[in-house]
Amino acid sequence: MAKSAATQVCLGTEEIAMGYNSELGPIDPQIPFRGEWTAAYTIKEGLELIETRAKEKPEVPTQVYQAIAQHYDPALLRRAEKAINYIEDMATEIAGNMFNDDDEATDCVEELLELNPHGKSINIEQAENMGLNIFDLRDHEDLWSKIWELYIRSDTIMDEHGREKLWETKDHTISTGGDG
Image (cartoon, rainbow, N blue to C red):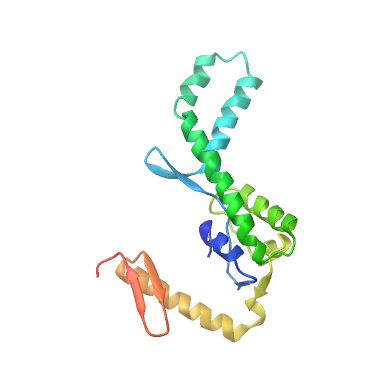
């Protein structure tokens, strides 16, 4: 499972290996908002919704919209817009490794940016339809079995010890978080 930032990393490759239950996710920059990490698009779209509703229903007192909008200061909106623009620029540049044409890279990144919600799944067929170069592990059962075993073993280690991050090499296992 590769969501948001991990999907961006995948864009930097020439090919993405995906198997039976592999999934990518939207590129969705997160920024701090009211003590939590929130999708920059959610903040931007929230303000746009207030503006749209105010135009559609002018009979509603202005104070109603002002009360809602007070939670969104202009600096917050600007941070959200900057995060979205930065991610779009970076992802498009990174995607240059996978796409021969800059317009194809831009189109794919725009599609990944516009997907909602944050945790949406993109399967193999959807990834291929976006123009991503997919190595279909379903056609390579032995390799898929080894990758799946590594995933299950890693997930077990993480679960048993409450770990947050895991790095595996041929000779070492390093994990962080948890109880030692």
